Amino acid sequence: MIEVYQLNGKKYWINPHQIETIMVNPDVTLTMLSGKYIVVKDSPEEIVQKIIEYRKKIGAFPNEL
Image (cartoon, rainbow, N blue to C red; front, side, top):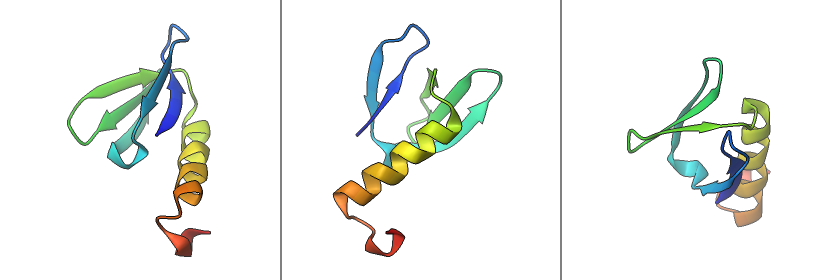
């Protein structure tokens, strides 16, 4: 799970493997595979970095190291 922040500053944890798209319009909106939308304060670059760190941590994809 990765930590993201809602617009009100509250922490939220999501499964990064369930993110389908990240859109900026103007708020950053994550579209999940379930069809649910999550609006967050984190920038797309921060989210991508968190996903990379998470995937390295769990070692699910060794060729990505």
